[in-house]
Image (cartoon, rainbow, N blue to C red; front, side, top):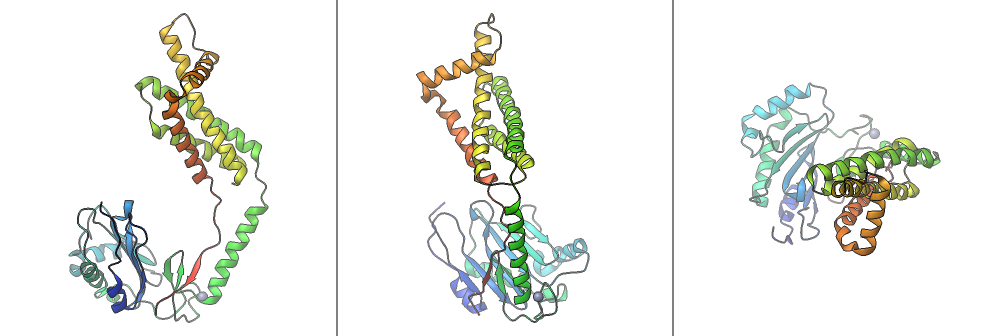
Length: 326
Ligand SMILES: [Zn+2]
């Protein structure tokens, strides 16, 4: 993939009166357009893995019809079915009660700004016959008039200032309620340990059965540990991350211990499979040729990274930004 430097949708943004989010960075395509157009709220950008999918989001007032039937109708409409990937399996069209999402994978050839603009225009043609556009009311309460859209987690919405305040206030309250809960470290650690042991045994069995080390298993152990920890502790915080990290490394180490115990028994059948033996072998390997464990250590670190991500504090307060363009 070549380096990406240029923003290409600027003139399109100007001609439709949309806000332009310029390309940031050089490796993943993330240029976007956001705003109100012909009564709908649009967000056009890139998504999917490595930003290779064209992602077009069209928002409208909440639908009361049957979504499945309406989606069929949209898929069949002659103007729209000519759009690339409209009926495709990869990407395709998702209809929800307040939005229509069209994703089109373009990893091989990237369409030009003019092409995309033409597609989005076609997508919106005669759309009001099927889906009503906004008429200036707040999406939440349906009563207050709203002139400008705001961005809720980067998605354009029509929320009146009262509803915005209520949303932020509710998020604040949930956040405070969460802060007040005491994390149960002991139960969390015990549950996490269970996950770590099960994961470690599975990792060892897989290594013995296939004579191969799979990096993905470290993530599996990490997932088990993190999931079990949250079940037990009921709350996530910094201490929980630390416990999760230690237990994940423990799970990986235990897998090694079982594997070594088994390997010793294979080589010397007179020695029974014993974890103490496996542990001593692991220590000796660590002392004498730690480089041979580099792979495992890396996998353990991948697991720890995953645990840290999984055990991130939940976010309750929505991010609302004012629109920048007219
Ligand atoms: Zn409102």
